[in-house]
Image 1 (tube, rainbow, N blue to C red):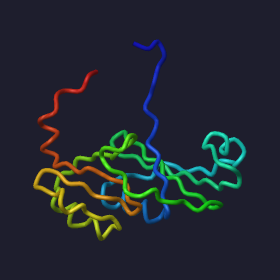
Image 2 (cartoon, rainbow, N blue to C red):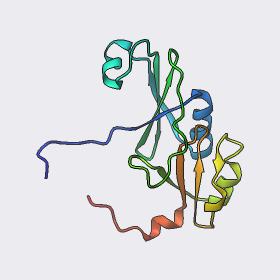
Image 3 (tube, rainbow, N blue to C red):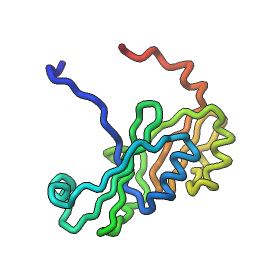
Length: 151
């Protein structure tokens, strides 16, 4: 066991269009805007391992203690590395439980995302956000079968 304190901070997502991504996460899943920042290129370049100019804008959204940091750039062109798959090392997906899975799946396209159709059942489905980030959606009945969380 570590002797230092560790606190979860956030999960960062690079997005092509901040407004589009905010509409998706806030409108479809109820994330709330928390705050935003435009950090200076000096220092940010080193942390992000990018050459200046950067023009980072970070928008923080909050839902049930989960903080999503939406990263977009005014001085860079974000690029896609292709669809991530579940056996690719690294972050594979974000999982959310929803009270009405069928209703949410019916709205995904309206909010700019897509349903991975072959995964959809009455209990779970995979969807992609407007930039292709994979999200696992679980009917909230799943919450009833989880063991209690440690204190």
